[in-house]
Image (cartoon, rainbow, N blue to C red):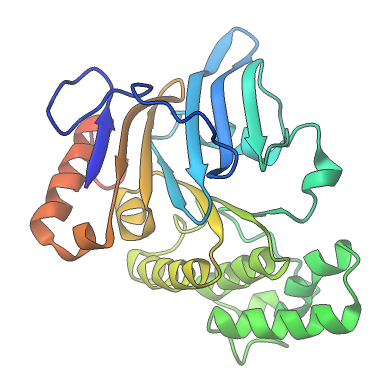
Length: 274
């Protein structure tokens, strides 16, 4: 377990910005450098810097109001920053929409499925928008529904699916376009803990198998600890108060898991429901 905490000095802890990498381009798919964002007079993101490596699963964890969703909007290119820079594969998502088209996919807290389309047709949609051949889109949709363990749900409509099944369809739709970067905005948080845990496990397995890069927003410590390689804990206004890396060995060791949990809980000042 490796961690970096602002404002604390311990042997195993290094201050953010202490070590620099001179050539980031081959390593990091996503970079934010000194990003600031205001809505009117309200500061919502304050000098935020972070990097996400290729193939890494990163959690942005914090309480409601910490600025997580604003950061996600910056990553999606839905809004632009007032100062600093946001780069995905070297491009600005708020400006280079055409270049990044199909390279990023998003899944939201609500599944946003179209109720008049079947599960398979919902998964096909992103590929058809990207002008993929219809036959290819259909085959890929069936393949990805199977990968998220919805083998028999191809022809079911949204109202016939449980909440967990609908979220699986949403994740399959995001992954089917073969994006480099997958963004999840509280995709697990509306599900009960048991359903959420199974979905996180299955999603993590698929993402790692296909070496996708993923950034997900959550307010639950459990979500981050279960699947993230790196956790950024945000406090209002979207400042990083804690950054730590979680290894597979950490997840297998109950005492190490407890240390990580306590560090995160202390940083956000609360329990699993941040």
